[in-house]
Amino acid sequence: MESDDVLTTLKILIIGDSGVGKSSLLLRFTDDKFDPEQSATIGVDFKVKSLTVEGNTVKLAIWDTAGQERFRTLTPSYYRGAQGVIFVYDCTRRDSFTHLSNWLNEVDTYSTKSGIIKMLVGNKIDKEDRAVTRDEGLKFARKQSMLFIEASAKTKDGVEYAFEELVEKIIQTPGLWEQQSGGRKLRLDTTEQSGYCSC
Image (cartoon, rainbow, N blue to C red; front, side, top):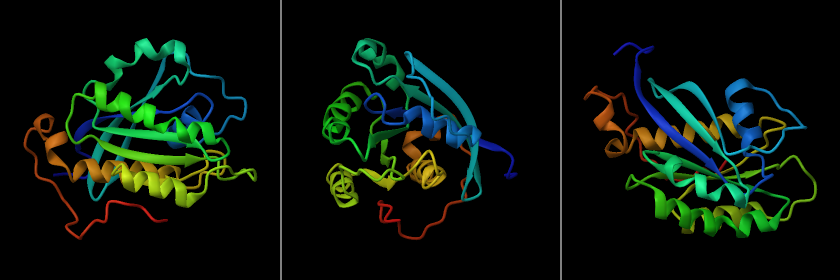
């Protein structure tokens, strides 16, 4: 397989409360930009980016969903076929952290793929007024069998790594995507994975 051959297209969702920085994380990852005046997402935003992980190039279709309550009725269809979900909370807003259980329930309710890979991202670590500790985030992620990383869309810290970790885990779970890939052979690193990022 040529390295520029796309293995498969993966559907990734970014969810979480309004104002936690979902759109900023997506913009930083896809365009390497940060807009401090980023407006709230209306309904859903959508971006495509190719990523090479362990010699496998995949195309990511990333859906950025609105966090506001009035858009909740739009979301069930977005979950259909998704292989990965990034849950985002704001490290400076405890309410965005406590609401994660609601978002988890939504994914469990609407997800159409068993074994969907979940990544928890604590955003805005560049800010001083932290309300949620790193240990709290890690503990929650472990309890829910999620990958975990803290990040800052503003400074770029952890952003690319979050997407790479998620994609790597999806690739290592062939049942999530193999029916679309035409049975191509994978290059996989078979070293033991802990399932948690401790960076």
